[in-house]
Image (cartoon, rainbow, N blue to C red; front, side, top):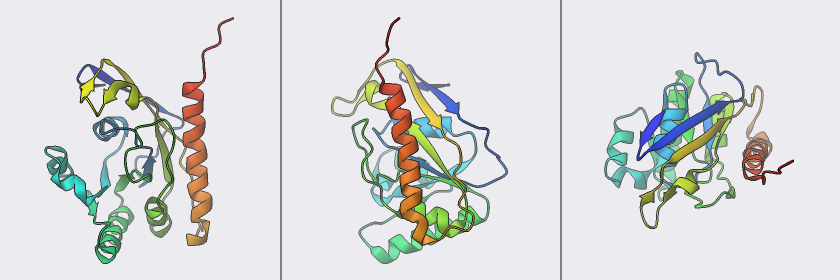
Length: 196
């Protein structure tokens, strides 16, 4: 599917998703281009769990506001908790959510340290986590110059990680499972091509 700027989005699903279920989509975050691309790539309706600063971004902020999304105000712990509770309630009602567990753009193919919010949300709501790996947005969009080049952006939607019976004690394990999936996909993508 074409996103504009002569950039196409190609999504690979490791397994079909049950579109009658809710999920927490945990996505790595390279550049701002990730946000509209994921909107195209994820095959079911979802809302964003987004940091409050994005509400002020032209076009992007209003589009998030007009979707079933939740802004997290990380500068106010009480408001942050309340926002996560709202997101959890929406998940329990059947709406999937998408979140960048790194918390901000990496401008890199390296996965930054994860914040716990996405994983707390999944555990509290009792829904599977789906790792979503953006492979090459960094190659297509330079945020410093605001220049994009034509090409295909590749996204891999991984296998859902079931968390039935898991508790907050299992959050570090869940974070590591998601990280391993993302790093494996990026390593495979960036592996040098060996010619026969």
